[in-house]
Length: 68
Image (cartoon, rainbow, N blue to C red; front, side, top):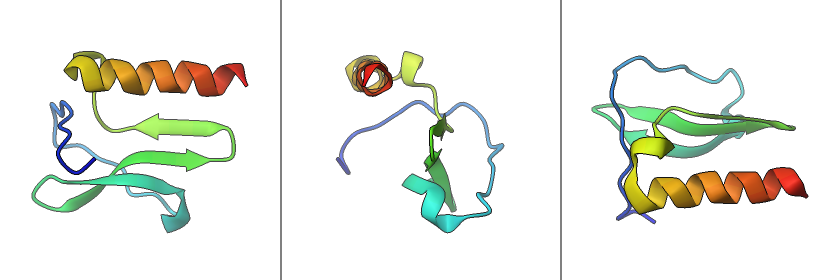
């Protein structure tokens, strides 16, 4: 949700070539792609392992998706 917070530790970021690959964004002074997906490849620009219960839920959801 808009109220959830995730841990970002750096200012490096990628800009996806395909805007449709952007799944989630973050306002980090500028709008950045926080989660991208293209076919069976996913990437995140944050640290779910350091993002408390919400980050753990992201990891659990990802594992469940991979098992399908």
